[in-house]
Length: 348
Image (spheres, helix red, strand yellow):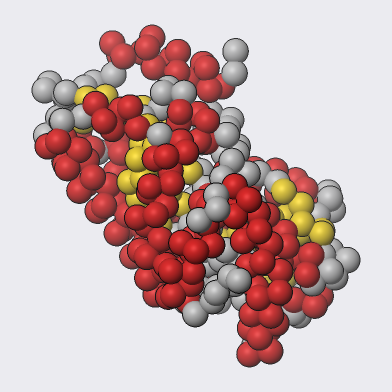
């Protein structure tokens, strides 16, 4: 029996032992993000575990994080469609193999500033929601960012050209294209597999959020933090469509409003968590959330930004555009009219 099956079966077996609100109307089985990430542990989990209180018993939740269940995230849409879970946290980079369109909101290099990312994502929200409903019978509830994604490397890394010959953990095909443009090799690994892979020298570098890498203790197995923001590893919360459609109109409105508050909280801490991750990894102050370490800080410059823009134009956007148009012929036209219009990029 898989972890997924055991979890779903366990729900049915343990209902009697869970203290539900007296007037609970709807029970929601939720899979959240990784338990060792600040936003997941401090915002997402408390939100879902406290949903019964803030909705006065309209909703009760049974919440588990993805790593507690031994899941890796690549099958998230299929798991959502199974109906065992009513709401799931989903990483677009992990599920883009099922539909490249979902990765359009987190292509590397196109929106290094958080304000730009938020505006671009708002422009993409409606077409993304329509696509998720059409392809996966899912209802898009929230979109939010992890801290800025940076390079953690064994040894030195002074710039993107130094990726040549290195094996780099990535979590999307677009990041792989970016790494390969600079002569590196992209290696797809689930987050939980990265630490031992760095430790054993299977990979040389890995990309993740500044604070996420700190919380996973990557500073123990890497030496240099290169701070050029590669992306924001945008995350989604998606509801099973049948579950969503089965709710009354007032309950849908109530749940959507409460999830929107969680989304706002996620955005509100992204910049702070980015800075805290950099400070903690490199021994700077203030370090308030993470663990103080002594990695070498490698700061990017205007030349590095220009190189990144070249890579985006040369390989990231054309590569993703061709892949996405093959799956959905309206893909790049929608992207150009939404994210492209905000960021100034166009996919031919």
